Image (tube, rainbow, N blue to C red; front, side, top):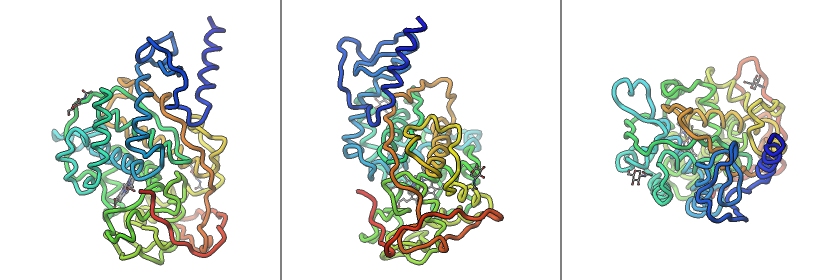
Length: 397
Ligand code: HEM
Ligand SMILES: *[C@@H]1O[C@H](CO)[C@@H](O)[C@H](O)[C@H]1NC(C)=O
Ligand SMILES: CC(=O)N[C@H]1CO[C@H](CO)[C@@H](O)[C@@H]1O
């Protein structure tokens, strides 16, 4: 028996090791429905071996998400909007308000109660993303909280360097509309953001860790000039790296075309959008050291890292950023829930694409353009890319 288990687990490891494997089913085993549990492992109808048979159904959702939401597996606008929707649904959680009889959390309420929640200013552009997720959830008989969580793990995996996120399934489909005013805004002070995130249970370190999301982000609502549509927050918006932490610390010199937009401050690169709140958090004494620590090129990978795919390829600080982001997102996704009541379906999540680029100073700038705000800790030095100052291209539509 022991030997049989060992063989089975070796198969599991082998299956997990191949990149971009999930969703590309090559074998179909007829007659086992959504999966069959064989003791500690389960065999899914697509031939994949995972831990729990109740997670098998998520394999068939992957290609639907990739086709209908992520434009055939891209790190593009759909990916960014799903991540933003995920955050905006989850952060509608406030113990202070819960005590006063109002509720939130990553419960899918942004989908179930979209008529109300898309009237909140930060959610006004999320309608198409919400409708695409609603359609896939209903077609597959899964809850709105689960689809939002799962879509986020699949979408992030399309961005090279992203961590493989945790996926706990089995949330109830019932949700309560989020109270208004809980989503942080670009004009908020560091204190307002830290208080709001603190109310939801996040430390200042975890708040910075979550802001790694802005490494794949862009703006569409703050500067409406068509030439600045999808102006990104760093120079590599299709890669999950640590560039946003580096670039928000570079001396600001330019606004985006037609700017300044709403809550826009000077950025170091033409075409790059820097929002006031990111600028403030990078420089506030409560967050500046965490912001800067995320930049250090020679940080060792922390213990979480063996949970991340492609650890042998991710190097230096980008891996640290990815691992901290993973932990903070795992916390965000179960706010207000008891994680022990959910099924760990993380083994269905596709492996993310490997990260190919290293942290760097963009062309035309030098380490001397970096401004450090962590008292007593010198800034790390980064390789300086050759070439003149380039205009940052818009993030993918
Ligand atoms: C805590 C303070 C935060 C503030 C003030 C903030 C604010 C903003 C704003 C104003 C935009 C631009 C929206 C637009 O013009 O369309 C944006 C974009 C974005 N944010 Fe945040 N955000 C915060 C944290 C987060 C977190 C924690 C996440 C995810 C975990 C996140 C994910 C994103 C993504 C993915 C985009 C890009 C959307 C796109 O490119 O279409 N943000 N954020
Ligand atoms: C979830 O609730 C919506 C209504 O808000 C409904 O249309 C959908 O079928 C429900 N899904 C499940 C899995 O019960
Ligand atoms: C250079 C730097 O600040 N490194 C820090 C990175 O983060 C870890 C964990 O918070 C710290 O221990 C390091 O000092």
